[in-house]
Length: 223
Image (cartoon, rainbow, N blue to C red; front, side):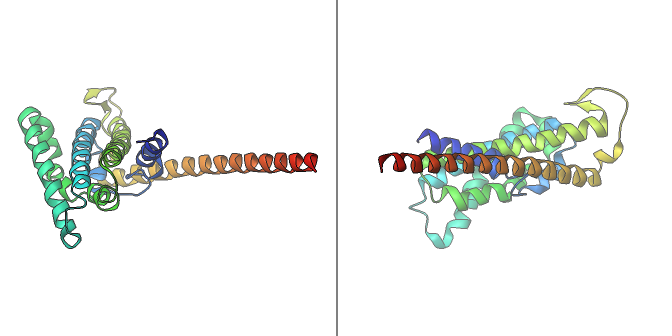
């Protein structure tokens, strides 16, 4: 894989097509689990594992799987890795397994994973697909963990389970607080993203104008 291609995939997964803040996918675990930052890290790690390995297998089999049954095949592959990660967490991290509850099993139908399988892994080489799964997972994990930190600190007065203070705004620990926090994160992220995009476009326009002027001056001198 070329370095430029790697950078494009990394930027897409973490920023330009951030699944949580740009594409607004995987909203169920985002809203339900962001009351505790540790749960967010656990869910994020599980999603990264499933994304990477399901993308890997789907990319390897992309020329073998018949088009008419591709979605059922994708779901079977994804479900296999969800089962593996669920069994691992249940065996070695039982408290996390209890905290994640049914949302761990629901990774099977998570729009992020099925969406990347359909739109990317089934059309791209293996290494590209693995990187796409990795950075999409990282983008998802960073987003929900940051939200989890905000909601846990404000709603419970703790951080990763450690008590910070007794002051609490219980609203942020409730479902309504989840929607408000999510909306604020989307708004702030997109305002910053659009501002950076405008700045980059303006800079590119200036460079293009300078290049045109330089070319005109060179042509005038040669004439």
